[in-house]
Image (cartoon, rainbow, N blue to C red):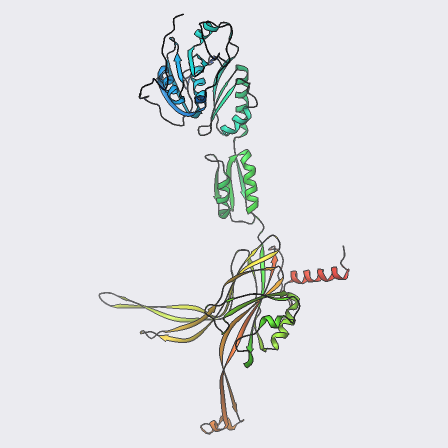
Length: 553
């Protein structure tokens, strides 16, 4: 037999332009497949998948063993439109750094679009779709027609394979290919392109049919489903971004119905279970914290003008601890420190008696407020000072003056933002503030604007549910005036001044906040009693019964 002496190799190939060869991600097509709209059965395309590794003569006693080439494992991308087969083989030889010797009958054209596959896969697909075969010997690949291969080696092919392209609509191509790997034969090959949802099956006809049926079944099982999730506790607008992260890319979708607080989700059936878990994790029953506050002031004696020594004071009470000292801005006292301490709620009366020993105590307010977790609660004991601002608008004919009343909060103010952890602790971001009007400023328009002195601090503390937190160290100065007079005589005009006297002096007062947070689920009733919330009393009663051994089972 006369052979054409044509060799394609990296050492002998000159530079050439392979028109139409670009990297792309397109559905795989071949000349052997029917055009869209055509009917009729597609003829099976068969090729030898275990070709001999070399051919030293025109006929061999049997098929030699294949010799693998390292370059065949290199990954490439192809987009070919009716390209000459010899030009394509030439390009593969250059990319894989090996030699290709085409037979004299090799010809035709190739239409192929694949992305990120090995040269081995590309060569197999080209051979299968063009009725070619090849033999690997050393670093040379001999390409020939199927007829030449049979004539050269004789007999019936040991392995006949066909190629089939499956286009998936819903299922992930990589996942389906992994499952089909358990179905294919030892000589089979599966090439998956996740971006185009395409799977190329190369195997004997029986296995190809089984894999096509399995792929279609998995694709049907992965069809899109739509479910409506009506949220009970969370806001649909807040949970929607978390659901979007769990959707299948390019397939899943979620839309929001604000009126019914519902999320409508469309996705594959397997992914829908993960979406349910995400929604359940965020649509939790709202937890709340009841904060029982007691705001007191202690008018300090002359010996305690710099403030109460809380650490020394609390040493006399069991289970009362000073936990932190940190500065106040601006410092309202010589110490300039804010003191935090904790104690059990049943120790409050003992602490109150200690405070009465250092000065005159006065309870200013005992508010109780329920706040949702991660929302800010605000307690104000004071007044809203009003002042007027004027805005003058000048026109060509006249000027217009507009007045606006603005309010500012003055007094004792406490802001608390609670967060609950799973162990029953409440983390509170606390900002106490003391403010007072020191003087006023009169504007050119005659408006009086109050000048407010403010002392504030901000910190975050964590306490056990039901534990009382004490915040002290906020100081303020008060002007105290007392008038003494003789009855009747002191009220006589002009002469009465001889029978009365006035004593004006300044006194220093320390403000103290007692905060007791109690966790509730949002359904309990909150009642104010002398010792706190009903839930807190029930907890204390249970502890007492357990201690006495009288709790009923």
